Length: 212
Image (cartoon, rainbow, N blue to C red; front, side):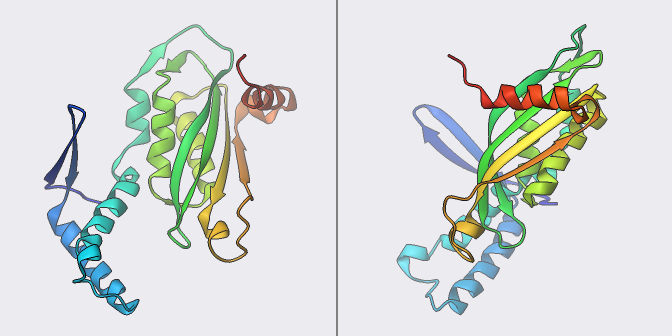
């Protein structure tokens, strides 16, 4: 858990809109100290003007990129569940995904496609991308991320079935190791009706189509 309270606020005014980021100052100080040692070990001078504030910036970025640990996907879904007599497939596709590989702590990013078949309840459409973000904003592997999204929706909504497909590029493959810049990893996870070929094929056809 990030355990980010109590907080200090960083305000940023962008075109009249105030963005407030809140951080635990003790946690920022602790993480920053470790990054100062890392910079020294790499041969850098942490007191150099260009990177003087880098340890603090990296600490804040890291807390932001992993803030999903402090969020509850079930609570997000139940906050917008509605009784509805609808039993056809609901698909939210092309959801942007940004996550961090737990093996090298390098980003992987791409798109998630999520579908479910309601069983007496629907959920506010914005909550599906929220659930994707909650699990993506943790140290992850793509396979577990796919299952986390599927299981959260299945356990909370109890739908007739859930389908999840994620397509991502991994910088741990592009920047290091095999250095294959054009490779894309696809993972999928299904429950209930989506285990049947007909339903699964309908879902895959829908996420591959484009609106005219």
